[in-house]
Structure formats: structure tokens, C-alpha cells
Length: 439
Image 1 (cartoon, helix red, strand yellow):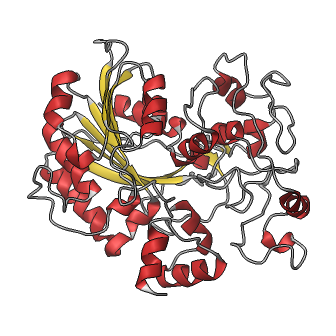
Image 2 (cartoon, helix red, strand yellow):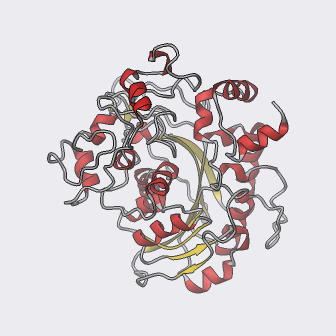
Image 3 (tube, one colour):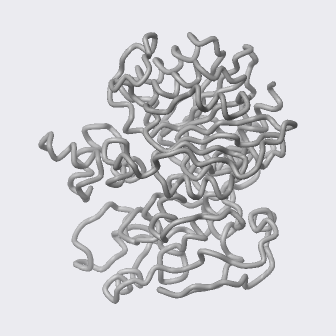
């Protein structure tokens, strides 16, 4: 595959069809389907975004509560991860940084005590953050994976150095703000990036800044979420406290992207260990009314059917974002025949795609990883198990554990990307609670 074509794929400017995916996956030693989870969309990454999309400082709308632990969220997106911290009742988001303006619109709406800083993080003045925000108790962040294009020593990080990659920028801000705790999250592929050198360099960098750190891979399905989403997390304490990682409470058969890595937190298998089956897709969404292609529902059809649904409704009385994509007649014909994978379709109905394209989700299992294209059946498995349509934005938000009261701002296409790119809030809450117990 030509280098020029690889560059287009990396930046999201070329379609990643089946043959290209298989060739690239073979070279990388990964499953072809997994490439869906990491290929950026054009305009989503630092290499392609316009410079002014998120520019400027957006002031907070309410003063921070001095009785709560301040949190600063880097690469914040809509603030899903930090929403989980606030759900504990012990933390408050006081600052956020992101490149994209539509993400910050949503972030500011849901985090009124936060100053939001829009723009390339390499141009952010940390002194301005420190002079306008309480000193953070914790700094969290997940730099986009395409930011790790090279490895250089972290020892000599300079202000506004254009060579800095985004991991180095996270370290630079940690060095200036000196929070009690740091939380770094990213894709599982970081385990093997550059043969493991990138992860080792990050850990060494945090340790050189005086933090005691440890890393693990969390699968959301093992921790009470209805989705097999995996994330790599690094947590560090400036005071040298040992971080007690949350244990897996749910069981599910799943082939992990982490392989046999000892960093993956797995359910216990002892005879007397108490675990329960993972939440399923239907556990998350079967209180939502049926909608057909192109239809929208604004009222709940039934009371919550389980605790997960009750918690995520969070007192909401009106249903939002439950709007199905208006599929073309040709796509509806494909959907009508859809099964577990693309092989279920009659020969000739589609000409290319991953094995999981044009496929239905299983009702009695956790969903696969939700991507930024989950309302389009040509993307990774995202067709409703019983209804002839792709998932609605509300269903995607449920699988990501966003409360129904969380307000998303922007166009429908922007909201779908915001949901698909987010770290599930309930994963954030897990880490927040573990920090409180370890502190």
C-alpha cells in the first residue's frame, strides 16, 4: 500500500474498505474490525482540524464550590469522563481544554463551573488556567491516539515546541499544575505502539515528575456497562499512594484487544467469587419506544425496566435524541436481510465491507464498541436487533452510560460523533471512586 494512501487513511480522508483493512490489519497484527475504532474522521484530529474551530476562552457560568475537589479535563470532548467524576458528589470540573468548538458547546452546557479553553493544547497558557481556576486535585485527559506519531525523551519539554506530541503536552501540563492525582486514558493499542516504548516512555515521564503510577486495561462490560469498550488507563499519585484498581464485577466471554496482557482487569474465576452476567444491549434500551426509519419519539413508552435504565433516566420526563436515521430504500433492503455479520446478506447485495458491516447487534449481549458512525449501517455492527434501522443517538448514549438529562449541543451528525468519541461516564465514576478510596 503506497505511503501516500496510508497517510490519507490515517487522517480519515480515504475510505477504509475490506481489502485495505485486511492488508493493514495483517501488517499491524490486529483484527481488521478493530481498525474501525481508531481511524479518525477528517477534521477530528490535530493534523486536519481548522485552527479556529474551538478558539477562545469560554468563562464559567457559576463559581466553583470550595467544598468539592477541583478537576481539570484535558482533551475533554463533551466531558463524559469528567461527568462520571462529578457523579460521585465529591468532584467538580473547573476547567476543560479541547480543539473542537462543538465539543466545548456541549462541555460548557453540562459543566457550568468550568472555564473552557478552545484551541490546540500546544498553545494553551497553563499560567492562565492556574490564575483562573482552583488548583486541581486531579487532572484527567485522553490525547487522541494519532498524537503519538513519534517517541522523544520527555525530559526536555519546552513551551510551545511544535515537535511536542500530545502525550508530551499532557505531561507538560501535569508538571505545571502538580495535581494530587493524574488520570491518563487512551486506546488499548497504546500497549503495543512502538513495541511498547510509547507506554514505557509515558510511565517514565510521570514517574520522573514524582508520581507513583500504575496502568490497567478496563473492559466496560466487566464493570457494569452494556458495551465491550476497552480503554487503557494510567493513574498516578503525587504523594506516592497506591491506587486500588476497581475489580471486575460482571462476566462476559470476549476476545480482548489487549490479548493476554497482564494489565487487563478480568473477572475472578474462583469457585466462590461473586460476579454477575454483563448487562446486555436490551438491558440498556428496551424502555425506549419503537421507531421506524426516519421517525422520532419524544415520550417514554414504559417505566424503567431495570436499575440501569432508572439511573440513566435521572428523573427525565421528556425523551430526547431518539430519532432514527432515514435510510434509503436500498439500505432498508440490506437491513431487512441483516444478521450477525455481513455473510448473512444475500450474495451481491453489497460489494465490500468488514465482516461486521451491515450487521445486527445481539440483543442478549453487551454491544460492541460504539463508534462515531453508529447511526449508519455501513459502519461497524450498529443495526437494532429487532427493528429495521440503525441505532438512534439516544440508544448510543445509553450504551455509553450518558444520563438522559445530559444535554448535547450541535447538529445531529456532531452529536453522534460526540457520543461515539466519549469515554463512558460510568467508567469515569469507577476511577473517581477508586481515587477517593485510595487517597
